[in-house]
Image (spheres, rainbow, N blue to C red):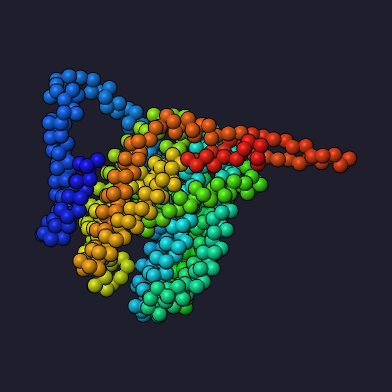
Length: 536
């Protein structure tokens, strides 16, 4: 634990020095990583060599190490699991990127309106406000289905997958109502927190047109989880692709060729989200793939709502911070893949497979983090031009992106750990860790570095990166301490017999109803959210 902590602490100033204070630029980040890895390796080697703890287990290098290499590698199993994760994770990542890109594409169109600085600033502020208070909440709340649906599907209890999804839809649509009311008061809220009055007015007019889209987005998130947990990913990808393609001409038409201006971008978004929701609803209703999991709407969806909300709140808190950018959506897609695979394996009673899933996913997440970070650094001088033609904006983005790249490397691992905890049903612990590290370490550090040390935005990012490093460390320790056999046994116990259908059949003489009961299993999580078997 101490060795990775020292390396993580060392890596931050090294990156700052070699990337921002030397002519090496992005090559400095690679050098800092190499130095940190070697520092870790040398420190551990010295400990193993000279510590009395390892005297009996380390007696020097042996030729026996060259024996049984193929059996040690078990490449066949590793490659099979890697294929399963990539087959599931890549389409999910692509879908997430497409869905997230709708907001940013709309912002790009508004950024190229000729007439106004306030319009673009207001639209950008409204987009951030909408994401934080609405869209990211829908993503977080719907992620509860990764636990419920994933374990139910792994336990071969398909009927309860649809019931859990319907319950999530009811909860999310209900929550959209107060969020919509709050969005109607965006202007006074922004002015209260001392935003520019003109910018706040533009933000309020934009976000009102996003309100219909929020309801469509909530349904899409539930439908997405429903299909993902059955490993049905291609229809989702195609649906998101069609919506993304549709959104571009819609934005062009409503932003540039109508009097709506920036409000046209919000209208285009709402139309695209509802198109996606309707398309997926038709697929779920008529596709043979979903026949076993979607039996139509059930009254059982109204049961266990408090238990669902209790877990959903933890899920939302875990994911609220992770859904703010397009590049994060790639790591988030892999996180969903891990969550689904882990919950499926635990639901099926295979703890060893669940553990193997995480080890392979760690390699994939690290590779993804390094690849995307390298791409961000290479494109740092181009990225800003997508949003604005202002030279200052382009230079500012280019200056910040190396820190964003470093953040993404650490964030990829954090997304992996979050997905693991969701698959295990340990969202509550994850939420506590994220909130604690963010507000005890991240926010104070960011404030000090940003305002006291006068690093401004760079200081905010550095504080955020340090908080993420601590999160990764604590998550890693938590996952290493999991008793997988015990967790799988608990998951199996929690899959209990309950009533899935009630049919009241009345005869003509007015006799009492006959209840035809069919048992289905439902899954719960770490908090033992189980209703007694006799309850509906």
